[in-house]
Each structure stands twice: as structure tokens, then as C-alpha cells.
Amino acid sequence: MTIAATQTFPGPAWQELPEVTLLENWPPEQPLAGVEVLAEAAVRVGAEELELLPDLRLVANYGVGYDGVDVAACRERGVAVTNTPGILDAAVADLTLALILACRRHLVASDRFVRDRRWRSGWAEPEQLGRDLAGATLGLVGMGRIGSEVVRRADAFGMHVVHHRRRDGLPLEELLRAADVVSLHVPLTPETHGLISRKRLALLRDGTTLINTARGAIVDEEALVDELVSGRISAGLDVFADEPQVPEPLLALPNVVLTPHIASATAETRAAMTRVLVDSVLAFLHGEPLPNPVDR
Ligand code: GLV
Image (cartoon, rainbow, N blue to C red; front, side, top):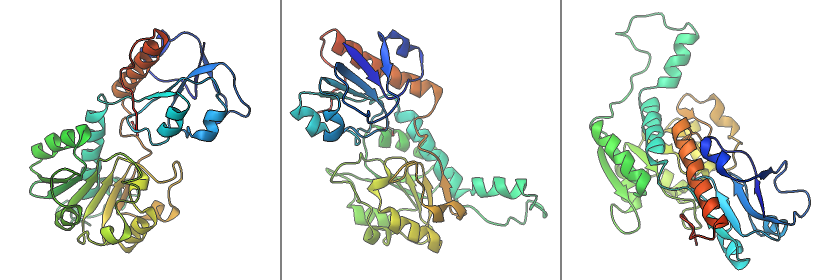
């Protein structure tokens, strides 16, 4: 049986797999017979790619989000799909708070200000005043495992947290109108694609901060760029609609903090994700039930 991977994954668990064929290209240039297991991250696995791996039985997706994998197409071909939930919630919540702080306290612009030797007056005459987290309303769109970790941290900062999800919380429009900071914690699905539309972005009050550590395509990115260029709102963005492309106009804006999809990128969390992925592959190899199957 051949196990193929689009890359190697960090941490000791990776060594526990039998021989792994590293794919130089994705998608492969020609059909690869005999590959039964594919370990992948951040690539598209749709019907076309599946055609190139005719013997595939398992897609082990590195990451909690598996929007790059066409699960229905996999199911049709008898290919199981697993992901790595449950171990990255704290890391993603940490980055969410880091982005909130960075935006509300002008951290990146202030760092640049000092490095550019533009700091000439004393501390009592700041160029730009930030905004407190304490007392600010944080609106969470989505309230799963990651959202709950964000709540714990936001509570410690004295933020007032409201949320929206399908079964409870505020209606989305009401939340967007009420929040000082909006943070997105829903998976990318056909239902959430473009959820934060141009019309909904317009509901944000002037000075609101939008944080996205989920998926870029949940927001109408063109509309978001327009709002940010206007200076009406600020944003902390870890994810983009067409990664690694970042819309050019954002690069020069002082009201945006940009990070390259690093929410789960700590040594501990990435190694734990590898552990979970490897456990799925080992379970498959031993004919045991898969620990984290995704079926839709
Ligand atoms: C990363 O974005 C993940 O889905 O885990």
C-alpha cells in the first residue's frame, strides 16, 4: 500500500508512518496507481484530483477545516476523509485575541512608527489613541470549540461577548450592528460562503474591527477591501479568499493587520495536529474505525 503526502508534517508522530511518498507536484502530472492514502494540507482534492489517484481510500486532511476536499466526490468513490479537530482551538483563539489587541492598540503601526524613527514627542502626546478591550462588545459569528475558547479569553479582558449561530444567539444583522469587534468562527461551507456580504459589512458601525481567522471566502473580500480603503473599519486578517494572494490595496493600509494563515502555527499545536493525522492513517492501515471521519 502506498501512502502519499503533499508535504511532510512537523513533530515526532510523522516518523511513525511506514514509508511515505512525497508528491513533488499537486495535482500529480499523471495518474498515480497504488496510492491508497493521501496526507494533505491546504490543497484542492476534488473530482479531477481524485481521477488522478484511482486507488485512493483515505484523504487525511491536516487541519480542522476541510473545505478544500470535495467530501461528496470522495464518498461517491468510496474514499474516506478525516480532519484534525479539537487540538488547535487554543492556538486559534490566542491569535484571535492577538489580532484584536494588535488592531485596537495599533501594535503594528506603532512598531513601524518607532523603527522609522518617527517618535519625537513624549508618551503623553500619542499620534493615535487605541481603544480599550474592557467594556467593548465582541460579536462572535459561530460558537463552536474555537469560539468557546475565544470567549474564555475575551472574558479575562473584560469584553462583553455576544454570539450568533444557527440555533441560538443574536440574529446576524443585530450582532453586526451591535459589536465593536466582530470575529468569525464558522467553517467555510456553501452556506457560509460570502456570509459577510457587502450589505452586511455596511451594517458595521464606524470604527468596528473585523477579525477573520476562519476562511477568507466567508467574507465578500472585494467589499471588505472597499470598506478598509475607506478607513471606516479596521481588520485583523489571517485568511484570504485566494491564498497566498492578498489583495494589493490592503498592503499599504494602516488599519489592517495581516498574517499568513498562522492561527494554528505553534510548534506544540502543529505537532499535535500531526499526531491526530497520523493516528487516522494508522487506524486505516490497521483496519480500525477512523478517529475523526468527516462525512459532509
Ligand atoms: C487551518 O486553517 C485549519 O483548518 O486547521
